[in-house]
Length: 317
Image (cartoon, rainbow, N blue to C red; front, side):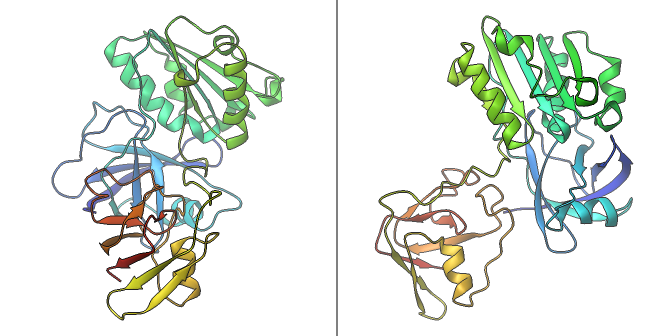
């Protein structure tokens, strides 16, 4: 995976508890991206985290990220919000898009909290293209809304609605009108906590939305397929040492290797970052990730979630 070097040129709070980062290329140009895309950020402390790009896709001079300072952080958001500063150099992956815009007469964007990040890029893209959209955002209070100033400026082709739990409009009590009355040719995009996306996704289907028109942001922790009925144990052969390690039906390759004392680079553990990608020398992988392209899957696999179709895999480890 080829990484690009970028420099943080601005940090600022964007809503209570959120930190925005402006990234500019250290050398060369940033790669183009489409609304909904994210990048893997390789932090100086060794962690790799995935963050959606909030900036307008037609702006090629920078990427704008926004990170929530999570109280239960595993180290990523805490490090970003407390340690990173202007001038810090980072390495990032090329943008990848698991949450793209689709053709539709009306685009309905519904987010909660920091889930606004990819939706803002979508709004900017739709605005530039003159395509109609509606954006609903839920937060506990007005001061917690990311990019509030931009939202209040409004859009020529889109309508923005802000809903605050403190004012009695929590997502448990309030349903956007576009969800209860689907617009003709509409496409619905949900981004926020898993329970939030689950609730509105189910409500959309109950009110007549077609399943193919309901799209959810991918960072809910459910991308990598769990062990399935019928999964079988297999063996992994380490090419460098000839060591043979058994992977049980209910264990991932990464877990089996770590338990055997083999160092495995892990980050997301959901098959979306590519940190644990390894070359496959022999055998047939069963890919369960959402990061590798079809071309990359020829001869490579992710260790955190993928399995084997053959009795043995030989890995370049």
